[in-house]
Amino acid sequence: MNTPQLADEDVQRQFRLDGRVAFLSGATGHLGRLMADALAGAGAHVVLNARGGDKLDALCTELRSRGRKVSAACFDVTDEAAVLKNIALIRERHGRLDIIVNNASNGRAGTIESTTLADFEQAYRVNVMAAFQMIQAAVPLLRESAKSTAGSSVVNIASMYGSASPNPSIYGTSGANNPPSYGAAKAALIQLTRYAACHLACEGIRVNCISPGPFPAAVYLEKDPGFHDRLKEKVPMRRTGEPRELQGPLLFLASDASSYVTGVDLAVDGGWTAW
Ligand SMILES: NC(=O)c1ccc[n+]([C@@H]2O[C@H](COP(=O)([O-])OP(=O)(O)OC[C@H]3O[C@@H](n4cnc5c(N)ncnc54)[C@H](OP(=O)(O)O)[C@@H]3O)[C@@H](O)[C@H]2O)c1
Image (tube, rainbow, N blue to C red; front, side):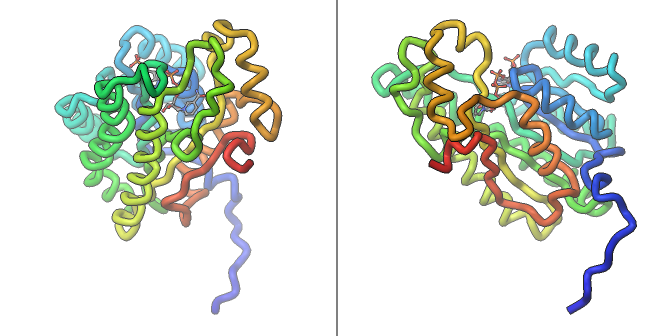
């Protein structure tokens, strides 16, 4: 066995994304904005996606004012034709795609009795099928990228509720009851991650997911003053997450720093799923 050599290269360089092109869905949301800044701050050109054009343009302007390289791709990730068109546009405009972050999600709150089959279908479309189609459509570009990098990277944003049930006692009258359709779809996304990781590993394409814990947006905390305290009580670290705390984990998985990591579900949850 060879003795590993100490490299001259600064290990921090492994986290840089200079010259790479990343696609990030759901970029204008509570967590997506910080993910966009992390990827662009590491040197990537980031193609930012969401359905709402105004918010997307405002985010582009804000990030460009800070010297980031970004562009907008306004479309619904559940629209099959739009996904194909936008991957083709990325090829045309950039000639490459190295990183995909499947982060877009939406859906209404609900319980076993109020959730409909249509809610289930919608949750599956946005969380699972859209991620699948994005990966499928981008495989030729990701394969090309892997030839000139230490590997291309897909990061799917799942949830702690993909592996643990929401505790009903937390939600009270917050109106934010996490519905049964959400965690079921996120569990499927975690499994899709493992499947894609195993089937694409030999091509140099890594596929991982991040399962965030509680990162509540202000709007949910305002509706029910006790909600935040009940959430914090369930976290071993006794606090909820700050969106910036997803930046490091995302950069790790998106970059060469994780060149031997694939098929992983990285919990970023203050220990929630470790109880
Ligand atoms: N916040 C948390 O505590 C938490 C915890 C665990 C997991 N997560 C996961 O983390 C990710 C981000 O959460 P978040 O809190 O940032 O959500 P958010 O604030 O609701 O943002 C969702 C983003 O997705 C976009 N979007 C929704 N549906 C879309 C579609 N069909 N096509 C394209 N874009 C779409 C939204 O913009 P438009 O509406 O303009 O399209 C928005 O930019 C999600 O996958 C979520 O499930 C969040």
